Image 1 (spheres, rainbow over the protein chains, first blue to last red):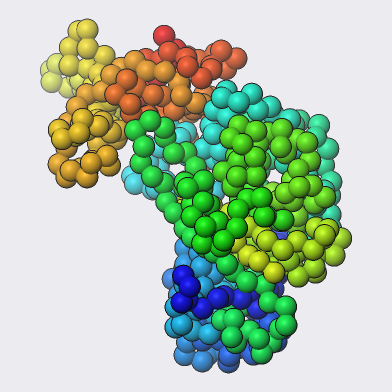
Image 2: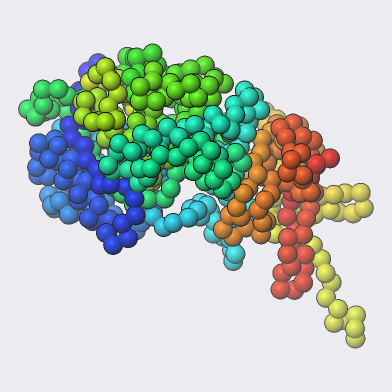
Length: 379
Length: 143
C-alpha cells in the first residue's frame, strides 16, 4: 500500500431520513449531494467519477440522479449490496483514487421505501410465491433473531442487554436533526413492544425510510487545496461468507476476519478506535459486532453494551447519531450516512452528539445481504 | 363408470427437488441432499459444486431424518405469503452429516423449544391443488 495515494473524505451531506412521500428520489439525492459539494468546497464539474448506491429502483438510477447536478460525461457506476450499497460505492471510489485513476469522486446513496416487511429475495417462482416464502422461512429478522438465540444459549446474553442498544440509539438520535425517530424510549417500552421474531421486538428493529447521503472523496494531494485538516480513509475492505462445515454463517459475512485485515491496512488496532458505526438494523447486530471488531472478548458483547461502553461518553461510542434503529434505514443511503457521521465526529462537528476528547480514529461496519464492508478513518 | 371418474388423491411435493415422498410402508421420506465423492461433505439443498473441496459433480444422497436444533426463533408475525401463521418456530436443524437445514417446526410447544432439542423429519400437508392432490412440505418435529 505504500506507493498508493492516500484518500481523503473531503465533503459530506445528508437529506434527513424519514417519510417523504411527495419528494422524488431526485430531490433527496440532489439536496444531499449539493450539501456534500458545498462542504467539500468544490463544484460538480470537479467530480471525475460518480458512484450511486441503491437497492430497489429501475436501472439507470445513478445517471438520473447525477443529472440533477449536471451532465459532464463522467463514468457513473451503480453499486448494490443491499444495506451496504453506498459504503461499497465509497470503497470503489477509494480504490480508484488510491490507484491514481481519479482525484475527485462523488458517492450518492439513495432509497425510497414502502412501509412494512420487505419481501424476501427469491420470493417469486411460481404462483403464490416460492417454497421458502410459503413455508414462512423468509422471516425478517429471522437470521438476527436466530443469531441472538444462539448467543443467549452460548453466553447467557439477556433480552435486556439486546434491548439496551435501542435505548441508547433513541437517546442519541434526540440530538440528530436528520434522524427519523427523535424520541427517547425506555427499556420497558422497547421490551414490551410487539414481538417480531423472538427475542427481537418491534422497537428493536430499524424502520423503512426515505433518505439520501452523499460523500466526496479526494486524493490527499488535491485535498490540500481545500482543507488544512483532512479526514483520511486509511483502510477499507469487503467480504462475503466463508463456507464452514462446523458452523452455519447466519450473518452477512466474516466480520471478524475482515476487520483484522482492515485494521492491519490502517495500521491501528481496536484499542485505538474512538468512535464507531455498526450495522444495527436489529439490536443483536451491535452486541455481536462489538465482539467481532475486537472492542471486547467473544461472548462479552451483552455486558459491554449494558455497562454503557458504547454510549457517547463511553469507551467505544457506537452509532452516536442513532444508527439504523433511530436514524432510519433507507437501504442505499445508510452506508454513506455512516461515513457522514464518522467524518463529522472526527472533525469535531457533531454538536450535542460530539464524542469528547477529540476522537481521532473511527471505524465503520456496514452489512447487507450480499456482503459486509469495514472502513477505518483517521483525523 | 365410477372407477373411471374417480380421481386418485395423491401426495405431491409443494416443490420438487427438496425431499422425496415415502416409497412404501416404514419409509417416511427424506430430504434430498448432495454428497461429495472426493471429500465426503454433504449439502442441502442439492448442488453441483462442492463448497469444501471444489469438485464439480456431486452424488445424490438421502439425508438423516433425525437431528438437533442448532438455533431457532419464534415468529411473532406472519410474513407476507406464508401458509404458516404466527406464532411458529423457525429453526436451524443440524443433521449428523454436518448439514444445517432451515425448517419450521411442527407440533412444537413454544415454551419447550431449546438449542439442542432432538427433532425428526416429517412430511406435512400444506394445502390441496386444483386436482385435489395433497401438496406436501417438510418440517421437523420434537422427538
